[in-house]
Length: 355
Image (cartoon, rainbow, N blue to C red; front, side, top):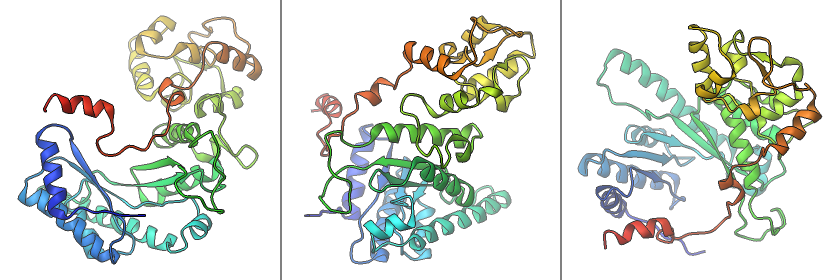
């Protein structure tokens, strides 16, 4: 496969030309390994230094740290970037050894730990000196390829949960596996394309871990290791835990409100604030932004449900499906297409305005 690369000067020129024309608000910079990890990280560092110090680039920068690069280079890059990430690549060490034997989990986790420790030191520096330089102020993230190896959703969510807890990651990204090369170690090619629905469910579950105080072991188990394709993870959890419902809107605490299907964290905050003033009913919930077509099966207002409802899994499942519980249209219609830099028709339309 023929590979190409940009020099630091070319990266700066391209970035600033796009930035001045308001085509972009930031830069995502990554690289394969050229000669050695340190050589590659030197080029990345040179690019960012020129952008920040010589070109006065004030936009957002997300940079990939190269596993195996020296700690000093990672530290220097961290003071120039807003976010740094090290790709986990595959969910487990066994899968990494199988498909990428030249990479090791230790080489990936070591820079993650380095960034975490340096961020902690930087917080102390900022507490003492308000104008101290900031190290990776937007935190660090990682990415896993989904569908190339046989891990279950349960295993993947456990890995993500562990990364959030042990390395204080801001975000774990999930990338559906796309066939590029044929190999006996990879899944057989099918007409279905990348597992985008699975990727979508993992992102929904990841949101529950980060913002809704769920744990991976609550959403899935060894007996039920994969997400339901029909319902989002929170709705599926509620259907399996009907003993905790219905929830009385006027008395339930904030954490329980977060677990009600159809209630987001913003709606939960609004409910807690609004009920200090008076008792809420279903018309109030609609104004607040609660999705009642889902929530009505799991809540009461003043001890009453919105409509007479059986608190039975089969009954609620049938009604939710008949009410149009489905995937967002953009996910259903999403297809995989490999684009070059200028192949996006939406972007091309904007370009015509400036020609």
